[in-house]
Image (cartoon, rainbow, N blue to C red; front, side, top):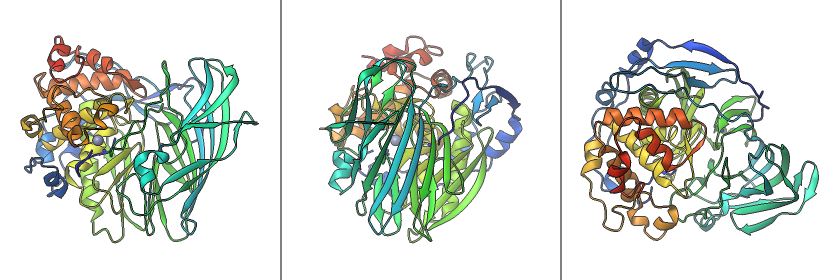
Length: 508
Ligand SMILES: [Zn+2]
């Protein structure tokens, strides 16, 4: 979710074989340890002061040296995902199960984007293969660009005629963000359907948001029609929020994106690029940035090699190297704490006009001046939202509280999180949905982000909380978790954690 310090908070078309054979690869711990030893530098962060947060930052290097555990043993799936094998118990942490694998019947998206800056629009086409795990009588797509915040900036997403398995089908907008395609004959669980539609995204001007155009710099996040399916539950119809936040739910899927951009401009996007086609496997969304990027690259060992790219749009006055150092350090640290990073690439694009950061699988969007806590916070979301998804409208603490925990651990700022006052209107309400925070946006950051981290800190030894989160990630990898899943994971390590967390409004 969006990362809010400025007053509010903050993935490819390859049919998958049903059985994914695993090829074992054991990673030497020494490689990880050596990589951890040379990492981030801190810098002052105006956004932190703006939000009234503490200004002292502990060295990330110092923070990461406290996490040594057994070397994670990993397997690599034939489609290139790195997953943890079962880890034996240690003195500090009960045995952790192997990473859950992504659903073999996950959706497959084929997206094509023609970014036409003369027309100030993106002409797109979507083909999606979808297999519901429950019977349904409709298809639903969320059109997040039509939510109140992007709309007010001038963003608009319209869709053309919808085809289902090659036949034209009527569709209707039940609200500006919800496109419904009725299926009169119904769709049985386990049945594959192909849906296709053209779409057109009208770009706004410069906006402090996930969709923005400032000259040649374009941010595209939550920009295309997306299937809001929660396996085992059904369609997620949570209302959009006016906050700098999300209310979305989406299953992991495979993406192929063909991107056409104006001559002379660079494209950064989620996944791996070959000849302007980007592919990403088992991710719950994708994002794109266009601009004139100065880029730097490095390999993170998280613990398998991850190619990390940071691009800074010209004129932002930023040096990409510190962002790269910090991103690599955070990826390696969180892989140690919470389990391996599954994908082979990650990128960060710095473009103008964004006060904070917004996470997407494979591509984080940040603005200038966001080096310190924002960078690690957004990398934390690659685990809490990226690997383990959640309904961001119903349970925003599952991504924001846990990403704040990750940030605090990396930055060495947990004590500062714990010391912050929670506004009375938010105290004991950390588990509330976005509909609750809609009218209380001034309290949202402290109520959910800070209070979420405080709740975990109240359980006791932070290393044991990290252990519990390693259990949470392993058990729920590539899925959409619910609060009860956090309770189950914490219960592996702590006695009756619900009693402690109830004080904060979690598991009341
Ligand atoms: Zn966040």
